[in-house]
Image 1 (cartoon, rainbow, N blue to C red):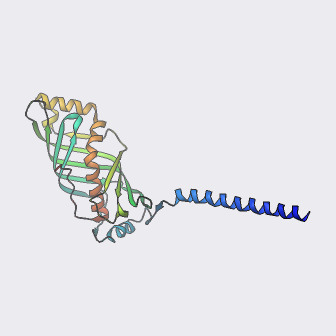
Image 2 (cartoon, one colour):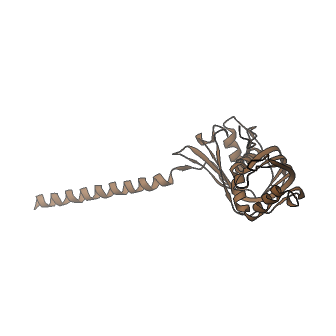
Image 3 (cartoon, rainbow, N blue to C red):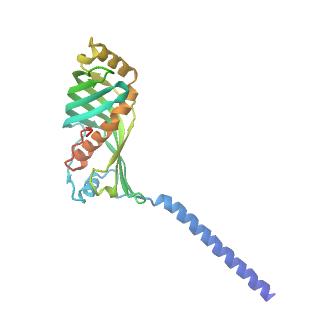
Length: 243
């Protein structure tokens, strides 16, 4: 009887230990998913975000208010579907309704992720040089103004937890309005040149594709402007030019 009782107690102990082990493994798996992210700042504390970037010693803290215009000298962007490139000079950029949506470090990849949504970003370019490529001919070039207002979420991903500056940073763009309001000058909209007319007609029929293509460069351009106007200035001017 005593031997049976001892065996029963042994089995209970083994079962309890196994249960504890499986419970700990389950908790570890779940916590792995939950512990990949480190949140250095509250999303409503931009001063903390400024201090986080500034601690690298590579930038100077700055602040800016929505509705105040930022000036930039140059942006080059492209819409391959429409065989066009744009050199935008003396841009005026105004952010509206900016809101920090994410700010964390992925401890596995060691990337800093910063995501900002904007109710609107207005870009007014008083001098845009539109270069239209034509097969077997010289380019057709027209100078005009461009005014466009985007609604977008920009996500900046910076390696080494954001301590290495912007050289290796990447940007993703999520447009919340695929067909934003925009305007070109009459040099484009009322042109009698067949190449320009064809370009304009194709553009207004497929604005969504043009926006996707433009943000391959404009996303980085706007994210850098926001970061260096609102948070911390690295002295980096991204123009979208290909070298």
